[in-house]
Length: 293
Ligand SMILES: [Zn+2]
Image (tube, rainbow, N blue to C red; front, side, top):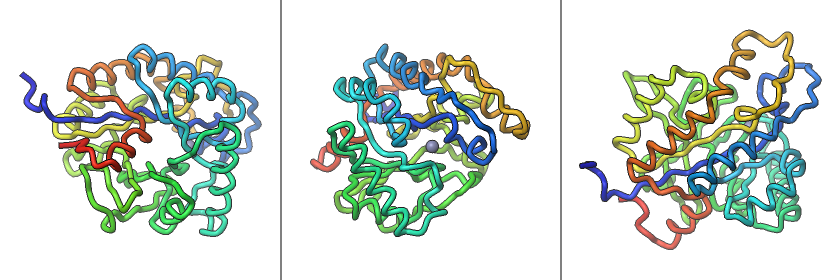
């Protein structure tokens, strides 16, 4: 029936665990907002629990501290904790020494707060280049998930993977360090992000699903990501003075995202995807397991 049914395929569900005020358009404004919208974390975990999926959480220090008790419970239930940042500044706006200092401080801080090793990193705005990527392996990280080969982003930076060995599309290895990229689907000369975030939430759903199906038909690796506010049940704070496209980005599709995520999970299940965390994927690849065909 399914052409590729004996192929091994891996899906990783992730969240960039950050406060509502870490969102780019809010950061750049002078709005004073108290709500952190972090209840979206629990909404996400409750969806994933239904399907027994363990996720990888890329945490900002302040947000992680705010949900420390819950996050400890999630970690003891098999979810991974990784680092999103000391603060939400785009790494390419920091010089390398400052980046190294902030990331080393944040890694140590999270490890002490949660009593686990923090092995992975995802840059705010996916804004990472090779120079800063090298800092991560120097600091003892085992993997990064910042490569997003989608040109129309703010603070875009390029990770050149020519120094890496390609394991499968979007997965690269250099020594014991892994780069787990964010998938896009190549369509009519365009690159369409299919990995969640605002794209899955705001895009026309039929179009998004069609792009996702086409991507999954030829791939064996998928990553989903989003932010807590995108699933929050709290009342969205007023954001006067933001441009209309930013207002739209913050609000569109929030109420229906829950259902869309479940549809994506069911599609992945139907196609025979196995759900893993990035820690698990890195461990299995490191042991030499033939994870992908
Ligand atoms: Zn972020």
